[in-house]
Length: 136
Image (tube, rainbow, N blue to C red):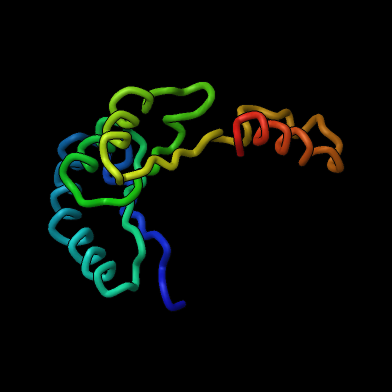
């Protein structure tokens, strides 16, 4: 592999770390270690973009405000049913050329499809229709 398109620093929030204090410690360690190492790889052309993958919008905002990152991925926080990222995170992303928000649009499948009651030959159809309806 000659180049990595995007490298994510993943799960540095209270949800994943177990507490705000643990998340704060992990954030500090990533800012001193992982982020500078990835930035060096980016300058060398090995990594094209650097992002963070998180579960909590408040921690996404922290990364956007304090780190030089290119992308934010929030797990399930900007879907058809969950709009937690609408306010602060989207506004922060819109105010900068980067980061861009690349959310998981449908969490577990496309909202909910009762897979067990569907014939195997038709399982793909509702997923395609659902993705088309939300711009996928």
